[in-house]
Amino acid sequence: MNAIYLYSAGTMQAWSRRALFTFFCTILLWPSLLAKAQIVSSEVQQLYAQAQQAQASDNPKLAEERYRKILRLAPDLGPAYNNLGRIYFNQGRYSDAVTTLTRGLEVAPEMVPAQIMLGASLAQMGNAADAIPHLQAGVAALPQDRFARITLTRALITLNRGDEALAQLQAILQADPKDQEAWYLSGKVHLQLSQADFSQVQSIDAKSPLAQIMSGEIMESMQNTPGAVASYRQAVAAEGDSGNDALQHLAYLYWSTSDWANAKAQYALLIQREPGNCISRWRGAESRMELGETSPDVMNDLNTALTQCPRLGQAHADRARLLLRSGDAKGALQDLKTAESLAPDEPSVQQLLAQTYRSLGDRAQADAANRKFADLQQRIHQTSEEHANSVIKANQ
Image (cartoon, rainbow, N blue to C red; front, top):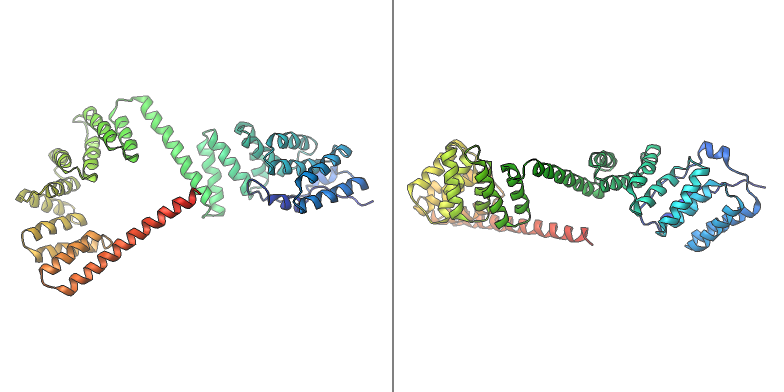
């Protein structure tokens, strides 16, 4: 009579084709199992062969029947519980899998794959707390098993154990830096942690400037501009003269949404408080330009901003626009060349360059700038389309 052990890599690989999760877990003949394994009867051997044939023929029902009969004949044959539990797991019969795998681990605690499947089954049943110890044991024994680690990560996220989840994700990404699911879960964990931090900010003092700024940022991320404005205005009132953070948020929101009149007013306040803030001075001047103002004060503010921060490319472009309005195309060209060197991929600079070269009578340079403008616009459009397609594919 030949001895067989119902614990083979082939068994697991055959059933893995139908697994609900990708689960590549090498099935090993652990030394302790070898010591405990029974020399089984010829009937059990025949049943095992039939079970293998059933799984090869994609007949899990027959394979289940054979393993159940094996366990009636040899109730202490741990690997048979593992193989039967795997059938249940692949079919989504998680309660049956838990019962079977628990029994198998009672007779053969060394079966690491059974530990991982038991943890995954418990997690699928919504019992993350009980799943985690089994998954941790599986990861400790088989640290390269991605399924065990990613399933453990998801269970930890469910219980808001973000720091532990990040440690698992770091290990996965070290093995495969392009693991998309791991990056997705990493973002999810960081969002979870940030939400906890935000809640803490609110719980300390919901009326504080920081709490109101945070609320405004959330509203802004949701493109709820009126809600963001309301929150930022409350933050400005709460902040008073003690700081300018809230006022900067409010001014930027007006500027970024092209609410030029309100942006002009808020940046005027910021300039009074922070005369050396080149960003505020430039954006305030740009807001006034968009409102049609051409007074010398606008040019003075742009000159001051560029004296303070000479690498503000957009400020150079704005000053060029003013110079073009006054007929100084040569002065505008100098600013635009500087703006182009600082922001070579900015289409609006190329558009202004084309206009300036036309004013100077240089048709060839104007045409070249127009071509570059079109190329940059096409590149931006293509990037947007690729991003949209990737989002659609990710949600399919």
